[in-house]
Length: 268
Image 1: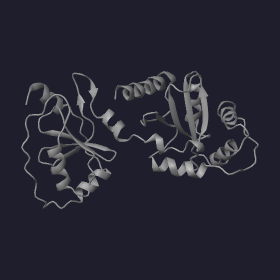
Image 2: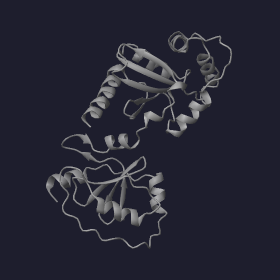
Image 3: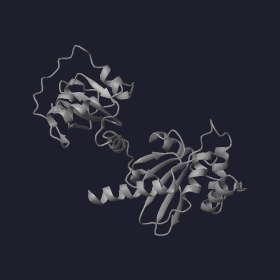
Image 4: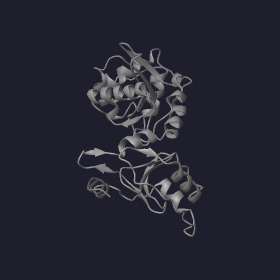
């Protein structure tokens, strides 16, 4: 092991935690024979390893492994299981859950992998159930948003995004009734307004409560949709390439985040 690799490994923040992936792995009998996998020293660049993937699939048949990639640390592999990213030694016995950091480069090596693992297939989003707002040339960038009308962070986000241009926003009304008892009622009233986008804007910026009558609405469907995609809080932003970001981020960060996704999609 080189000194650089040793520093990388020793600086890795690998915090063992309880997760779905861990539970699945733990369900495999400890008496299962471990396969002997002979591997060459890992290169600096990430490289998939079909042999290790096959070994893990045989060791843990109840776990779905999306990918197994060699890391810069010899004998340590990065494993994606559903929405979880972990690290495993070459025997397949020892798993580490947490983030790995390259300290000299001050880079979190796990964050982007977790982001990719938790991507949403935006093509499956029912856009007819969302409020659509187009700013400038809306074809340049797209943002999907799960938002609660009575969430203070959602209102802050709307203020932050006021200056963004060249963007199409699809807002899925996602009331959190446990926190905001009147949010669902407000969401239905906004949806049932003659001009939904205008009613949303007026309520989020001026607190103007719509006086519309109840109508057929997608609020319950949106709640189920958010739960399906792992939305647990508001606001939750989804970029055009499916990456998720929670919270009332400032406009500059949102723009950079959206542009980064567009650049990655173009590169691919």
